[in-house]
Image (cartoon, rainbow, N blue to C red; front, side):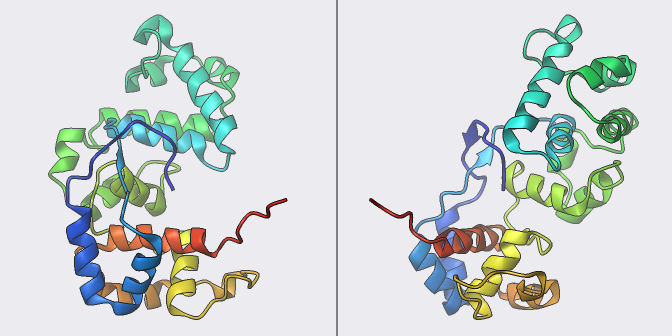
Length: 235
């Protein structure tokens, strides 16, 4: 799921998507009725370079710690970028490694950020204008060439930054668990082990009927996980 960002409306009508999903899949319709209207919004637009740099920094870290490192990195470039302005790819390539280490970045993340910067400059990472004209699989193919960027990271970008309507992230834990809860009889009280999560092939087979709105269906599968959480105890 995405980090907190200023948001904007989707480039498609979520009510239209919900109506189509309910008509296509009565079992999914029951989940939608429990979860309520789709309130999915997308993050205010960043360049692919900025969005992927942030994703690299946040990998395998608690959100607050990653946010602090991200902010320190941006602040360390104020002398060339200006206060609060994200550095350009060339800035990341030219800066001394100790500057990035002082912000809290690991060796591997520094290598990944420099690779992202180099691939942005050589055109492997498309510009925002270019990416808007590309289909989802082409975007995934281009961006997963960057060190440290896998398919899941690009899928999250497609759903939550670019507002693409038909993405099904079958490797996402929450989507797999939500699918098992909704379609495979997983009980909310059951301790989830990897073998109980939905298999990608099963998800893809059922999701054929959800096209072209699989991003919205995925959003509801995340909601299924929220609905399965026990209610907080009251005194």
